[in-house]
Amino acid sequence: MQPDNQQKIMETPSITKTITIGEIVTNDIRTAKIFTRYGLDFCCGGKQTLEEACLKKGVNITELETSLQECTKHSSPKDENFNEWELDRLADYIVEKHHSYVRSALPLLEGYASKVASVHGSTHKEVVEIYNHFRAVSNELQMHMHKEEFILFPFIKKMAEAKRNYQPLLPPPFGTIRNPIAMMENEHEFAGNSMEAINQLSNGYTPPEDACNTFRVLYAELKNFELDLHQHIHLENNILFPKAIKMEEENI
Image (cartoon, rainbow, N blue to C red):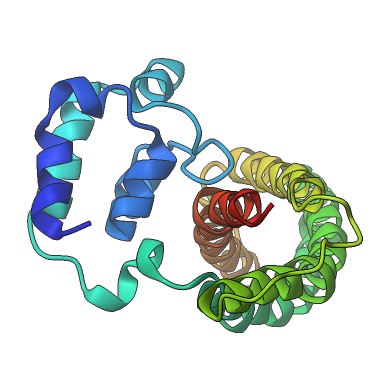
C-alpha cells in the first residue's frame, strides 16, 4: 500500500473506527509508538477495532485519530514496510533482530531483577513479584523461540520458497499450520500479560526516589524489553501468521 493510500484510510472515519489496531500498525509500523503512548495493545490485542480499544481503555478516539494522522502524513521508509516482505525474509528478520535481542536481554534482566528483589524486596515488595513474573517470561520465551526456529519458521520458509518456484509442498507433520500458530499466539498472550503486570507493578517503569542505579537500570531495560516484545509479537500475530495461514490455504 502506498503512503498516500495509508493517509486516506486514516482520514476516513467509517474505516478508522472499524479497522483493527493490528491492521493500522501493519500498514505503517510508525503508528506503533502512538498506540504505545496511549497504552493500547497492538500486538496481542491487535484484533480489536480502533473503536473497541479506545472504549476499553477510555481513550478519546478523535484525539487518537489526530495523532495517527500526524504520524503518517509523511512517506514511510520502504525498508520498514514489513507487510510487503516475503514471508521467509520476515521470518529471518524476526529471528535475527528480535530473537537475538531477547536471548541477550533475558540473562541480563534476570540478573538485575534478582539483585533488586534481594536488596530492595523488604521495602519494595513489588520488585519480588516483578522478578517472579520476569522469570516466567524468560522460561516461556526461551522454549517459544526454539519451537518457532526449529518447527514453525522452517515450514513457513519452505512454503514461501515453494510458492515462488511453483513447486508442490508436502503437508506438515503438525496437520495444519494453524495448530502451531495457535500455540504460539497463546504463548504470546502469556508473555504479553506478564509484561503488562510488570508494567503495572512498576508504575509504568517509574523507579522510586530511593532506587539505586541497578534498580533504575532494571526498570529502563524492562521498558525497552516490553517495547521490543510488542514489535516482535506484532510482526508475527498481525503479519507473518495470517499470511502463512492464507498461503497454506491457497496451496491445499
